[in-house]
Image 1: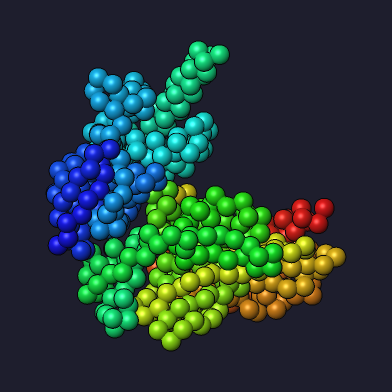
Image 2 (image 1 turned 180 degrees about the vertical axis):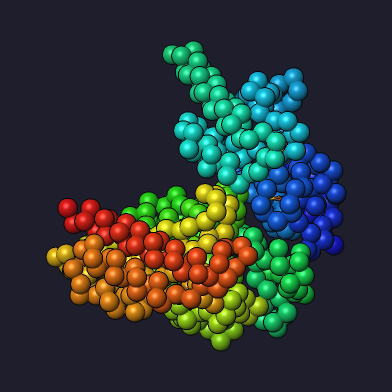
Length: 165
Length: 275
Ligand code: FES
Ligand code: FES
């Protein structure tokens, strides 16, 4: 066992990690971050997606010890109920989930995509989400939600630019 | 550190294959040595002649590299097929090599590009051709408990050369390839002067279609040549029946079509670069 320190959604947290323990199990069991979901546990479904040091990863394929000192963003770090992230708003508006199990991972993959490419076309959205599986929705609503969030945030920044002028 | 553990420790970088092996108890080690955060090992650069990739270069980095898109488009295409974004963000090309799967998209492309490896071990550095690094399915001549790849390198693309990669799978993303094929071709005035064709997974290791290559060299790059060459590839490959990938017979038939498409794609780029 080793005591490690890492930043979760901007807050430094510490916990005991086993050498072979995945980051996923560490986050859920040791730090109680149950917003990170465990689906397949082998890199196929993307439910366990987190953003580590700016890039999206499957936390089930990363060891907790490899995340020592890292900055991790989970779905909880994006927004709150009163102040949701544009992606979260768009998912609600478009009805982009049913059971919701895939949603935290989907939203984080979408965020990683939009951070790199703020105006993806439909093909790029599908590619950006290709590491996430949803058993319920059939993906169309999810795709729409991401497209609408990207328009929304680019409109917002256009507004800001206008105000600046 | 590896020296101290004397073969009982193993290197880990992206971990996208290894963590599964550990979980399934297919593999166990007393210690893992994490190299994934050592700075400077993730460089992609060209010295004008050869392109060098550090051992921590990820599939995503390849996908985003303009240099590789221009000089090694087969590799660029291959890496964009590995897993989904989350896996490509972690998985390294060096890991793709050490895992030694005959289907590995990245490695198939590198075999066609005739890549060489620099390997650092207890005894010092040695050079190994990538195609010589395979000793069986999932078995690499590189012993990750005693040595590590320090560099993957291959020649940049010259005038009159081109490459291409294609794969066949049940889905467009997140699927293992049923077949994949990478082609590198050199030409002069419409004739093939040199060629390398790699096909996977049709043998215990990435397969070089040597007979088809030999056939191609010296021939005019016409549709007849391509058809005959693809037929030669079909003759040469011996895919096994596979629950995941399809029957051997089916894949043998499909190998011809896939090879034909890949060779055509490479040739079309040739003309593009000559124009
Ligand atoms: S739980 Fe990690 S990808 Fe499915
Ligand atoms: S909403 Fe149920 S898995 Fe996606």
